[in-house]
Every structure is written in structure tokens, then in C-alpha cells.
Length: 140
Image 1 (cartoon, one colour):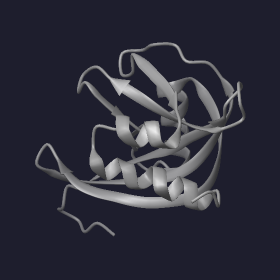
Image 2 (spheres, helix red, strand yellow):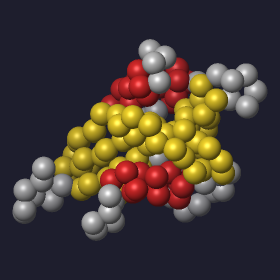
Image 3 (cartoon, helix red, strand yellow):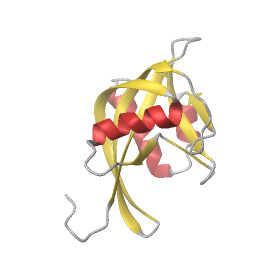
Image 4 (spheres, helix red, strand yellow):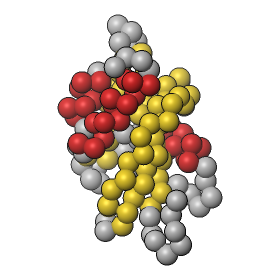
């Protein structure tokens, strides 16, 4: 719980997954943010008073164009960004429908195998979320 006066940034996101339309294998969606030139899971800051799960699904829709159904809550990531503590809550989420269109925040997405996603992620801390997704789906 954050105490008054500490300026923790609260954010939420999802490890978005689907079954490949080609071979049925699990694929994980990563987003490319040109502002940071990085590959990450879809996530973003919560609006004031926003429920973290609702915020996570909103960010997935905004960044990827996909509607998702959430599954298990995954580990919360805590780190410092721009000299402020940041806390990002994550959920496993299955993409059910939608299509990507480039926008100001995200110019590309990739659907990768779990190993491919782990290797492409810019931040090593994000790799643990791929492992947590597999465990939540009983594939680890």
C-alpha cells in the first residue's frame, strides 16, 4: 500500500496471449514503443481511481487493438522509472478479437513464441512474466 506523500506511479498491464492461427501453439504479444525504442508487455498508468484490472484491459485495447479475457494475476513488478517508484500489476489475458493499428504510443506488435518473447523483451524483469504466464496456464 502506498503511503501519502510517496509518489509511487501505479500502472497495470497484461501478458497478452493467443493460440497461433497457424499451428495452435501459444503466442505472446509484445508491443514496440517508439518513444523508448523498447519491446514490452502492454501496460500503462492508471487513471485516478481506476480499478487496476479495468486499467490493464483498457491499456491492452489502446495499445494492441485487441479485446482480452483475463486469467490469473501475475507477479507485480516494482522498479524505479524517471526517479520515481513504479508499481505495475499484471494479469494473464487471452486475446479474443481485434486487430492492431499503429498509434502514437505503439507502432508495432509481434506475436512470438514464449521463448521468442523472452528473448525480444527489452527489460530482463519482464521475462519473468512470460514464465509466470506459462505457469498460470499449466504449461511450465
